[in-house]
Image (cartoon, rainbow, N blue to C red; front, side):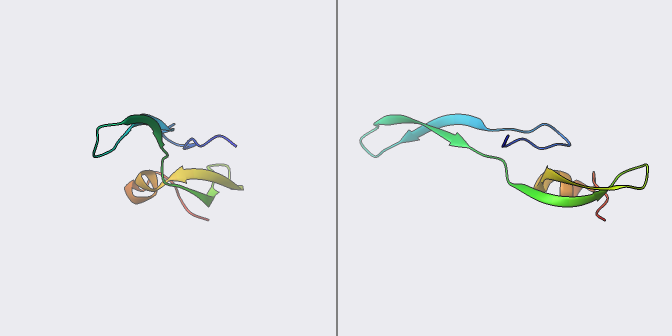
Length: 63
């Protein structure tokens, strides 16, 4: 399952965990995705993964 927003395409971002002793290890920041029932322009209903930023911005019309 791809962790990517179906509206804006936002996906995982990469960075580092840095300890107090400055030991650096890789880590991943995942987008805050929700499965939402969306009303398509042709009148059908689909369930897609949308990030919360797109939901707040009103880029999707919930069914």
